[in-house]
Image 1 (cartoon, one colour):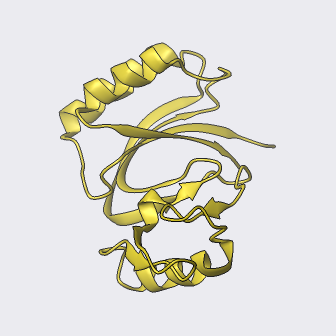
Image 2 (cartoon, one colour):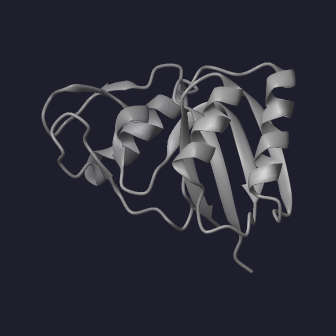
Image 3 (tube, one colour):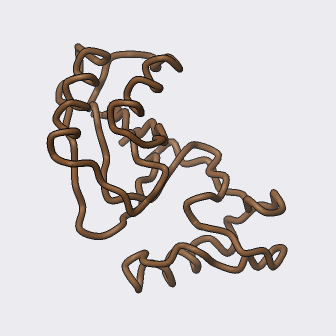
Length: 149
C-alpha cells in the first residue's frame, strides 16, 4: 500500500530547532493536516538526504540548468562518504561550484538534520500561507517535499 508524506526540511541543511519549537511546529502541522495518520518531528545527528521517493523526477545543475543525473550519483556518493559535511561540488557540466542542496530537484528534495512530517495527510496540498506559518513557527525558511513511498 502506498503512503504519502508531507515533509518540511530547513533550507539550511545543518540547522535544527529546539525540541520545544519542534513540538510547537508538530502541533501546528496537526491542525493543517488534521486527518494525518501521524505528525512527527525528527532530529538527525548527521545531515541526510530527504528524497521524494517514487516522485523522483530528476535533477538539474543550479549553475547552468543542464541535466545533472549523469554525475549526481557520483557526487552524492562522494559527499555521503564524509557524512554530507560539505555539500559543495564542482559541477562537471559547467565547472561551477554548486551545493547539492541547491541543485534543481524537479520534484523537491533537500538535505537536513531535521524534518517535520505528516504521514498520509489526506490533503491535496498546503497553501502558501500555511507554509509561511510553519516556517515562522520553526524560525527558518523551509523546503516542502511531497514523498510517495
